[in-house]
Amino acid sequence: MIELKRIIEAVLFSSSRPLKLKMLVKKLAIYSSEEVLHALEELIEEYSHSDRAIEIVIVSGGYQMRTKIIFREWVSKFVKEREIGLTRPMLEALSLIAYKQPITKREVDMIRGVDSTRMIKQLLERKLIEIAGRTDDFGKPIVFRTTETFLEVYGLKDIGDLPTLKEIEALEN
Image (cartoon, rainbow, N blue to C red; front, top):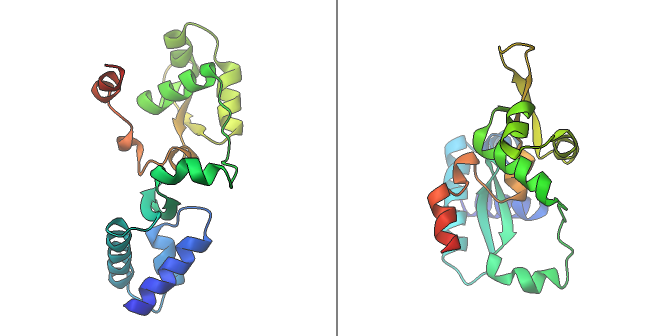
């Protein structure tokens, strides 16, 4: 088990993207899925109860080593963070899509009160949203949803990790 934990630790450290359990199990085929999951759980526990500046988190359905948020200011002096560069209108459209997905462009436009074509195009280009299919409504409009990249960029395990309206309102008070 110690060897497996060290292997997983090295792989997580070396990866720039979250690694899904399925991928880890596939690549570490000499170990059972239960062994890999158990090793991951132990590593997460070890990192969370240590004085290390790094933690292992579940992001976008996968596992990733990340610097603890309390060290963000220091790390930013040495490492340029990936800048998302979203404008306020892009954030509005992205928020609507994240909270109401799947959602059509028309619905986004109606809520925002302006045309969102350019915002949606830019969010698609940044791979923060994707086409999720079409509705059965007249004209079969396209519906959008957030992507795994969205979850990864914002450090979310899944869409259920988004703050609720009550949590957002509590921050404002």
